[in-house]
Figure 1 (cartoon, rainbow, N blue to C red):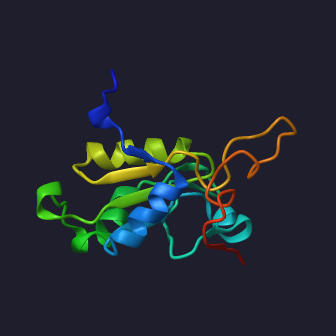
Figure 2 (figure 1 turned 135 degrees about the vertical axis):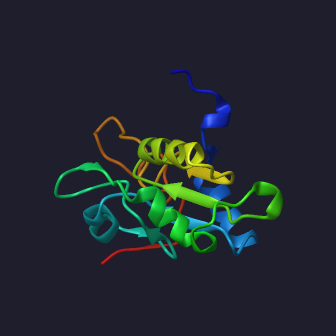
Figure 3 (figure 1 turned 90 degrees about the horizontal axis):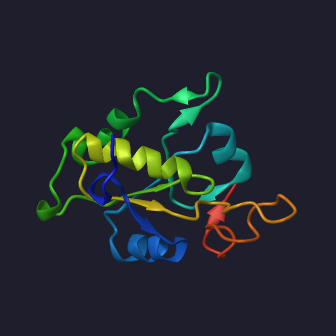
Length: 145
């Protein structure tokens, strides 16, 4: 199965995503990481948590699309021309959010974005995160338990 750009969510840098959230109050920032990551590593302020893959089984959440639909217009799939709320997905490094965004687009969502650096960014030479990129690296608002 081939992938086209129409199958993919639009990639945003962390700063672009923050600007979109600031300029479009209807935008929904969804942190799709596991519950442990969301709570203990931290998350963007104001993010809604809907895990894509979560403990204890570490399988794709079968209710993911349904849970996102509940966030957007009470479950209705909207069209871009009707002004649907942008959905911005964030994970650790941008890989899971890309996959989750593809799933939403396949199910008819039109205004889907993903933060291509994620919350923590890629690993550096010492195998540390948050040193090369990511929401936290750029000093954007975040919190943790």
